[in-house]
Length: 99
Length: 361
Image 1 (cartoon, rainbow over the protein chains, first blue to last red):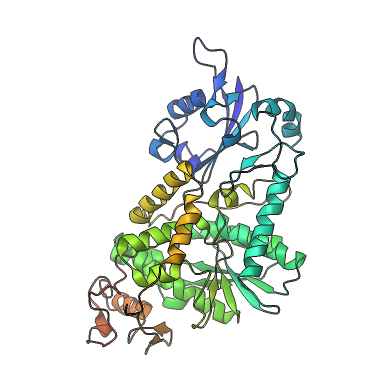
Image 2 (cartoon, chains in turn blue, green):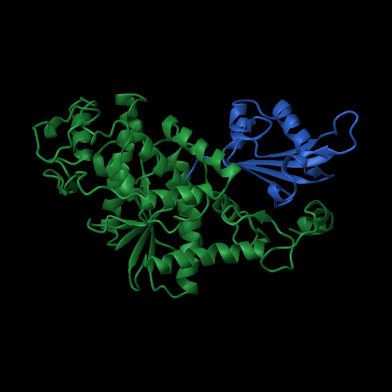
């Protein structure tokens, strides 16, 4: 499926200083739907080029990284269990520096 | 936004079809860390701005007719502060003259970019901007200082110089007060750091919403109770869309503060109220009156407030100009070396352990 991923607040520096990525991601083998959990694994493997610890801690984003799925706080849609759909826009913003 | 509207239907399913806790009409867009309420964008802007107005009124931060400088770094906090203060000033007739005040530390590739954002804010909000530079005030840019002293202790220079630069800029603008963008997360982090460092003097004043009322330019923090998460979400909107710059200072790895920050964010994830609770704890510390506080005087050299013969900036500058950059770092005191009665016994006035990056408390 096609997704638009946007990195901000310094996170873009971890993926070649590119803020917006139009990507094509397939759900894991044997699964019909794609969740944020799957997407985070994919991003880590395919987009993050350096300092992954700035983005991920344990199995989820590092505390202080804000996630919006279609302009909506992912805390409302189930965080890692959020199901993604075609053409969704996912935004990751680090709040950890820059006053 | 048209695209987002088109998706509203299918997103409703994902959000569980709940409605905003406040208006009971629209789909919620975020979970407020302060209250755990699920609210929509429209209600979020209203409640975000209303709470800051309330803090300003309850704490009497400003008086009608005052000239107020907003410490503007180009970062998210000060950019949102400049926008919200100019909105509230008009909406509620505060009667304030607002100015933007920026410090140019002279860090190539860092501050010059963020100053562009401040210049953009000057145009967008119609607020006059004053930029004071380390080069003009002290004769040194941070680039030159780092070239001389290396990457160690450079935050000491920057922190001391910035504090004074803001005061000097504020004096040039003839403002009555300086408002800074420190948010609730920043303050909780500072409470924690001051406990870890055993810095009683700073612990007792770091939670004050207004500080320096006895000094030349009082400072206040209208975002004292505002969560960083909400400040970050606030500008991501069609109604008040503007740009902000965000990056880490190239000279400041800031490890110690970074650990405290991460700890605060870990706590927030488990229980978002923890941030406000830490601020509350900081406020409720009763500092024993037998704890000796430094006495305020003025610097013999430049006239700036100082508890020593020379202010910290003058000591550091003397070191730079004489080619002895360690002067004023750690226990070497330079011109202040002669025993003084008001000195604290353990040399706790040393700034060496107090790297603060861009946070002045």
